[in-house]
Amino acid sequence: MSNIIIYGSHYGTTKQYAKELSRKTNIEAISFKNVQEINNYDNIIYLGGLYAGGVLGMSKTLKKLNNISSKKIIIATVGLSDPRDEINKNNIRNNIKNQISKEIFEKAKIFHLRGGIDYSKLSFVHKTMMKLLYNAVKNLPEEKQTTEDRAVIETYNKKVNFIDFSSLDKIISEI
Image 1 (tube, rainbow, N blue to C red):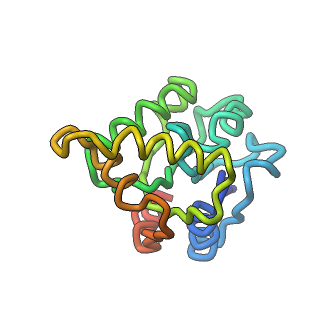
Image 2 (spheres, rainbow, N blue to C red; image 1 turned 90 degrees about the vertical axis):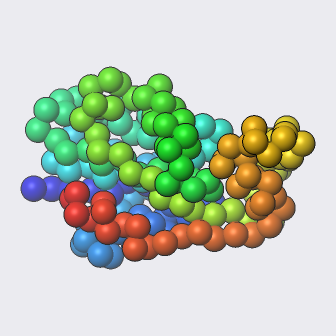
């Protein structure tokens, strides 16, 4: 069986997870930007950072698949919010569902990993988006705040790292 780890990372936390998963499994990890042909692989593991509700590079990459009947597809998202929160997981899954075909969505095993953020490294556009989001949620009554809202408030303008390589173990078991 041929395997590949493909990742979409803008600021590096997803790439760190992909490289560690590669190290633990001896499966090559490659950025989605450099992927030419994925139909030659039996097992496709896609790790993607969450940005504005979407999984970076996932749609573009998985659209390249022709016939998935004999393939194993694993998708792992990497985001700032706590992936154990059910509301957060459901929101992420719904966003994934809107990005890929129904056939791929139903076949894929989906996992969620927690990443981090370093505001000093954000682009002007991403800083602006985060400031707008922060301003929108900071004055919400606490009972109306989601865990995602609280994560934005707690980490705003900071450098935080929630990477936990042990959370890759469940993906390794699935592989």
